[in-house]
Length: 223
Ligand SMILES: *Cc1c(COP(=O)(O)O)cnc(C)c1O
Image (tube, rainbow, N blue to C red; front, side):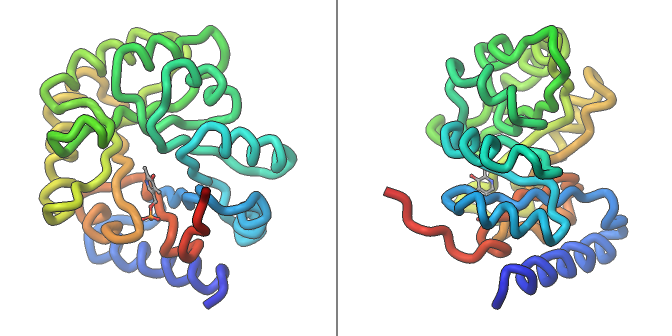
């Protein structure tokens, strides 16, 4: 199957899921995650009317952003981010989905144009997976709200490997309603849903889907 037909298929499935969840497909932003793939694939996607692209490593993202600087696209940084790289990511990214600690919020403070920020919640007990633990979310929301140059959009999460996605996403939605919205009524977005679980994410209120392999095909092996 070609890139264009995989994209068409996923777009159709998203629309179908949205309608069956009683939602409008217009509420959903599809971010195509292009990590490991060459800049040429990103250019092909832009030609197919994709304008939101996701990357999870700074060096690779920075390189592609430079190479494709003339194109009409927005970069979403979705991977774990070292504090010392934060300011550099800010330069090319429209949105950072993986903000999960005070030090990162502080490193992103700026008097320049705002960057969109999602706070990543860890749905497991494994700190290696990234994300703030739910019981530490409220102070992180407050810190992000106090930081100049950050526009808090909502929460991001990756479904755990060892439990069904839908109840895990329901927990994210519940955290948004109970912890985030009382402090930040505008920060209602949910960046949840990947190739394997975007239907479940849409049913639980996703606004941003981060989809890689279902559209790009398998990722090339990277050394
Ligand atoms: C790679 C990645 C995705 C996309 O994963 P697929 O399974 O290929 O759809 C989404 N979110 C994050 C944080 C990722 O690292």
